[in-house]
View 1 (tube, helix red, strand yellow):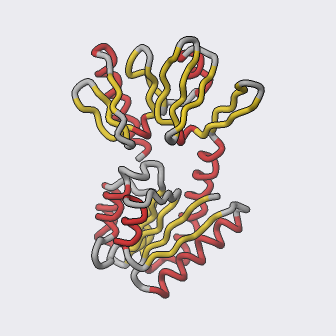
View 2 (tube, rainbow, N blue to C red):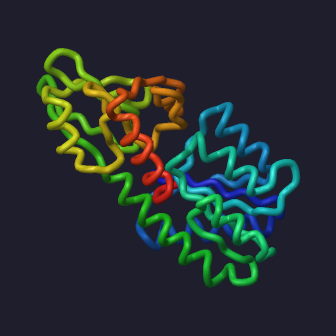
Amino acid sequence: MIEIAVCDDERPSLERSSEQARSSAARLRLQADVVPYTRSDALLYDIIEDGAHFDLLLLDIEMPNVDGMDLAAQIKPHLPDAKIIFITSHTEYAIDAFELSVFRYVPKSDIDQRLPRALDDALRIIAVDADRAFAFERAGRMERIAYRAMDYIDRSGKDCVIHHAGSESRVRMSLQELVCALDSDEFIFTDRGIVVNLTKVKRVRGQSALLLDGTELPISRGRLKETKRALAVFWGSKL
């Protein structure tokens, strides 16, 4: 299920954008739940305080309380993988939208043409990302963990321990074998015995990586420069 939030303080615009989101999902044969918001502070509260998850957000820029720009900036640390589409009637915001690295900017003057295309593109990418997962057998049963759910991986004896969404899963293989199996530039060694998902890193402080959930992981001196370089490249291209 793809979770979509639409935030616009003008109800007619909110209903139109919400309906276009539903239509796009139906057109692509994807299951989607569209949640409308007329108040930006309500959306922000749901995400920060209640832990609501959204894969895609359609945000009007001109809103009272918290405008779309501030809203996106505050949401990003909590939903780093979420795609954001800005909708506005003022073209001067386009540069700011670009600087925030949002997925797409849609002017209201051309919304009927450009929003469906933006939605289709975003939903296709989200659907592909949702399918990226690591599957393995453990104790006679199959387990599947989405890449985007993984926080970091470390070792315990002969096992790799995948830390994901507050849970742990063990895999009987070496860290190097697991990283090769994942085959993604999202995962890098920050220490001899630790692999971090770059999408979960909030910042690097000294020789530590602080994750979005508050976990602090060591970075070895020999890997500090490469970790910072990988983060800079990844943040610049993905977020």
